[in-house]
Image (tube, rainbow, N blue to C red; front, top):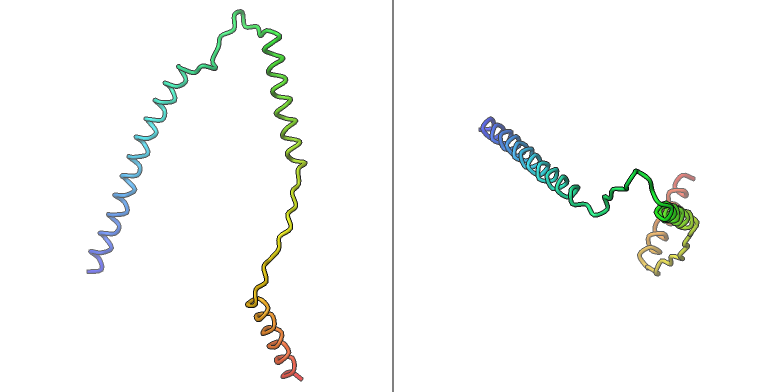
Length: 111
C-alpha cells in the first residue's frame, strides 16, 4: 500500500514538472516571436543618412543624460526622518514588570 502511494506521488510530481517545462517552452516561443515582431515595428529606430548625428540630436542626448544623472545624485542626498511613536500598551508594561519581578525573585533565590 505504501509503495503504491509513493509511486503515485512520484509520478504526479514528475508529470507536473513535465507539464511545466512544456508550458515554459511554449511561453518562450511566444515571447521571442512577439519580441521579433515588436523590434521590426519599433518607432525609436531611425536611420541617419551618412552615419552622422546632427548637433541638435547630440545636444538633446547630452542634456537628457546630464539631467538624469543629476536627478539621481540629488535623490541620494535626500534623507527623511520620521518620528515613530509607539502607542501606550498596558500589555507591554505588564510584561516588563513581570520580567523584572522574575529576575528579582531569581536573584533573591541565589542569595
